[in-house]
Length: 101
Image (tube, rainbow, N blue to C red; front, side):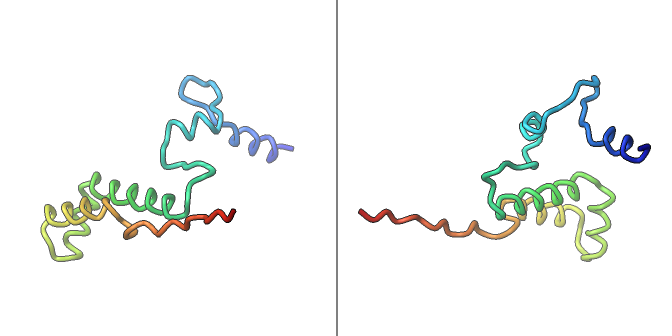
């Protein structure tokens, strides 16, 4: 019973004030959590953008990548920022449903 109680307590989400947060409120607050109609491409693109943003935002990580690539920190930052535009390449072609009358 003790393990079940601990799992149940950790499964509830709350904000710093202590009030519970529903899944809809959580998704509205954080865009990267997605929604039911999100495609695989959109989800992967969000993940890649979050990762690149983290690398650019943390100077130590950015410095590590610059040393590993033998490039300047500014150049690596610029490359990562440019890659954030389309981190997974161009979006896939949408298949149009043809209506037959």
